[in-house]
Image (cartoon, rainbow, N blue to C red):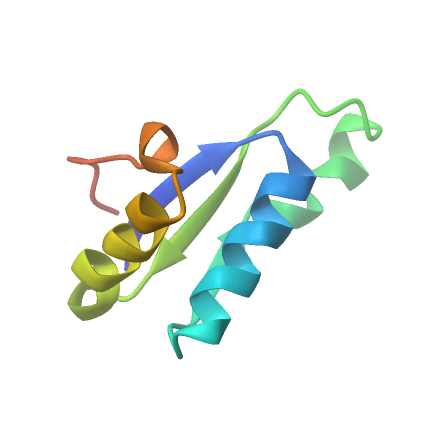
Length: 77
């Protein structure tokens, strides 16, 4: 698995999930349930991750959608 995006923006995460799902790319959101521990204040970013073999295609989908500034280029899990 490889990190694609890290953000506190839940709307952005939903949009990214929809974009990737439209292209048949499965994305997993890590730390989605951290709000139970943080009290829903949005202090901890959520991480959108994809399988290593889908990362290049997923990043291209986000770039085509104008979201290139959100892509984590060199991080690996």
